[in-house]
Length: 272
Image (cartoon, rainbow, N blue to C red; front, side, top):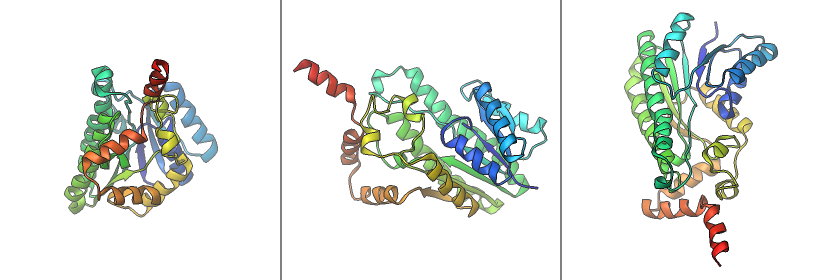
């Protein structure tokens, strides 16, 4: 019997693409999404195309006890999760103080708290079974300070550090942990975060990779059971390698240039 993969954030972006990739390889899927219509459509699409029946669990990770609901539902379904993919994530683009604190709290809830809670719940089972794989989505942003996306960058730094530490702790129990660090990906994430081309220069100065290309790289890494962390893409590896020569303060200034706010340019022209 093929391994069971649980994917959060499965109804869009890289989560959706990975759902297709795993379905193609005939893994049993447990797909998590907050939009019931999109989730049902995805499950039906996968069933028709790949002749496997995914389990869909409609849960908003911002809801109270959402992670416990996911875990308990897998128990009701009598499903043992072999591979946990914590893909779901939020972004907030703006000056930190100009965004409502609720936006930052929701980001931390999804990017950190839910990821840690799901890793703890399913990690316990994996440890008992002496088998499992936890894959957490960090980012190359986890290596940098992030003006205009300060809480997002900081959350990815947390995920990176947490995953590397957890990999060492669970190694004796045959449970692997991997932090994936992609760069900019062509997904709806930037529109939702308001960091798209209408608000920021980020997508012009850091050309996005396609979800197809990134997902192929990720599947290859997972098939080789990589642990610790992996940066995806040669240009991203070079970027991080070069950045190690610069002090954090200077890196902050570089990030300001990369993802500068377009609104500031518009205001400047209006005032001239």
